[in-house]
Image (cartoon, helix red, strand yellow):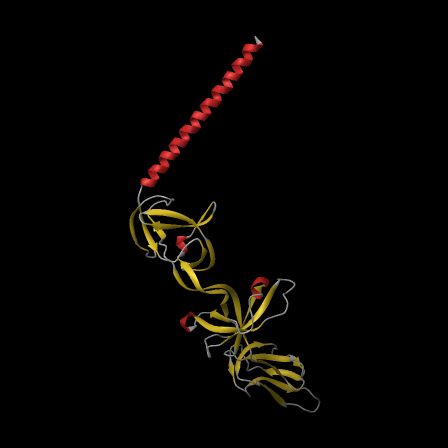
Length: 306
């Protein structure tokens, strides 16, 4: 009896194996049929030839415009503040009265001293109030020259390592003609902030007068790498797939899949390091799924799609 049970179990296992093998073979036939059908489905494509040209990769950091010319107004005598002609935002010239001080000394009644601005500029801070007692070491107000500016921005260590003095940048801010002002790095720190692990770099405009004013916020576009004769394709031609980055090329009326290695990139172009040649026709847009070996129904030059 036990012998027949063993025989039955073995037969059942063999039957299951045979069924699974038949199912697997059927699946393979179905997949092969589906793939063959896909190869016969022709897709319309748009193609572009890679071009040789320069490409620059940039990083954008937030910056603050600060004045390079500023002065603090002091009183030369001790006393009480009796008048404050100064107001934040007021334009002043050298010799403009910023505060009036009552000379606080016995026997010197009604003797006033005018504290003047030493430079032309704009009052950005009034530090005292009427009635305050001040001394020659008490700051009264701050005056800055808003058109004499620099930009401060913070960058991480990996970016700092790529920069040097006189490194060109673009400064983007509202009101700038053309949307940006050209500038260059004028100061690089030797160390990072222990709190933020960032380095504050200083930038000055190089294009002469600009609409940049102290207190404005900017975006600073910093080039970090450049290639002069790169093989460039539109970013839409590159696909991220399971085995890596790929591009599809039109070879006659057939699609060919290529593994590619990319380098620098910008909004309208990607550098191809390997995997494509300059005379390849890269497929940038298709009206269906792309796969190696499928047919092309119609091929037209690529036009960027909205």
